[in-house]
Length: 367
Ligand code: B12
Ligand code: SF4
Ligand code: SF4
Image (tube, rainbow, N blue to C red):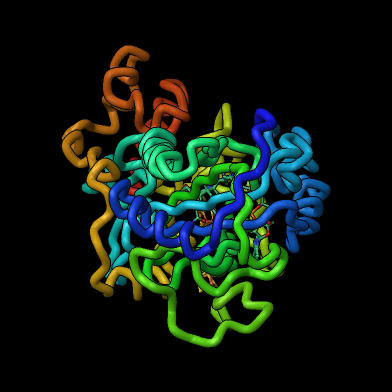
């Protein structure tokens, strides 16, 4: 914040503004966390780093305390606004998507081997644009509003803030899950100089967000409502690499999503089969989640169409992807989440999937 000072706002006025602005910009959920806020799950994050479960994700080790306390970077901030935008309304029970089931059906188009979050325009652009639209709207009411918006790339534990702001609960697959919309949600935040009178102090999660396209499950939340998984362990059981810890958390070094997106170099030696027919990202631990199955059956407003644009390119073959030039890669994937893996990552992934499918066909031929 530049030092303009805090702007005092009333909670119900902010709620009314968000209710008007969020639908205009395709945002499904919005909430707020008062700062400073001691994150109740901070020790999980510290332990995650201490155990080396960030794997090759070196950016996670940079200044971890700043990630836990935004005021260290910006002492003038008073409220973190938190937003969620749906990219899919759950996963249906009969989902035969190989990125979900790793079934390795050789007839499946390459687009079905890509995690759903990556089948459209880059969410960093779409959601960030939407958040900035909301902030512009808020500025017409509060011209001195200072805000710094980010989506994914900012140093925030976005899921924990979303949980604290009442947007949903945290699942054993580590995702933020809304009881009606499921976990197919992107998260983004805006650090602001708003001081919201009546906003509960952090630490305990709020019962509901300030704006929601559909309300959360009607039930009396207990004070410590953290997770609605109960005894379910489907995501842990379904994960092909054992990346999910039954005690909570994920080993990024063992996660297919990391292997196919972030990791430079091949899948860890000897583990290629675990990634199966998956080309990019991994949806398995969300596709098996009953909350996503239920969400798929519910009538909820459609997600923004920008998140479903890849289908038009389904006719490209894996062989073409495996030999893709940087120029072709740029033409097809610029401003999509697939950009993140670079042309060599795409070639590497396509070669691995082809080898997997060939091996499978050979094995079936021998039977
Ligand atoms: C690093 C990262 C990854 C890494 C590591 C993931 C991980 N779980 O840590 C990799 C590359 C593997 C990854 C994969 C994916 N990611 Co990612 N990722 C991030 C990033 C940049 C940081 C996450 C982080 O801080 N990890 C550190 C650990 C300690 O934090 P955490 O897992 O969130 O856990 C916290 C809480 O959830 C809680 N907790 C953790 N586990 C449990 C379990 C229980 C039972 C309870 C009660 C609490 C709890 O404690 C932790 C401390 O706060 C965030 C963006 C951001 N700035 O936050 C996106 C983000 C988490 N990713 C996102 C997405 C969409 C994905 C994928 C679905 C993409 C895909 N289809 O391939 C997968 C999902 C894999 C999974 N099950 O998490 C979304 C998640 C949206 C949502 N609804 O939850 C985010 C928020 C990006 C965004 N802005 O939308 N991701
Ligand atoms: S994204 Fe895939 S590999 Fe990673 S934890 Fe979930 S199921 Fe396991
Ligand atoms: S599959 Fe079960 S355990 Fe995993 S997040 Fe969903 S409800 Fe929780």
